[in-house]
Length: 204
Image 1: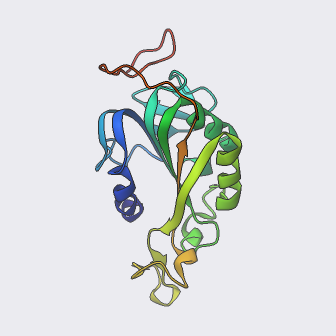
Image 2: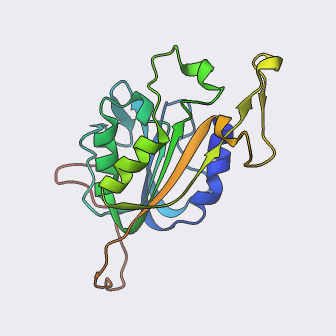
């Protein structure tokens, strides 16, 4: 997972703004989102069928105002979501115009799936995920395979591929980069932006 995170970092450095949201698959991963260029990032981790961390919430009710975030980075959290399509909807909802969604999911066809296939995780088809993203009004800018390839001949050894190529589709994860574009928007007056929570919610 650390290599997946490392290879996603260049995409993080392309996103500028004030506020973001980092959804990670477990508490064990660092809560600080390395490489991001934002002023403030809320960090949530999977806790059963909910998220914990800076906020406590369900997948279908992220307690953030609509159109309030410049970035949402979801790192392999769809596999454990009760309703992954609803989580995609919520991610799209909280993005502001021009905001970016970075959606990383485990490769359901990669060799590394043998490590998690029997642990109760649900494989997410990247084509299905892409369709969900488009259905929510986001525009896919690019997508590619990231992470290591599991070399069966070496047991549990994970080998890093040299480049995207013939065997890229066997890499451990898939990264989709999408942006919310809404034509005809009036430019906002310059000022100091703040992260907006839904009424009654506070950052824990």
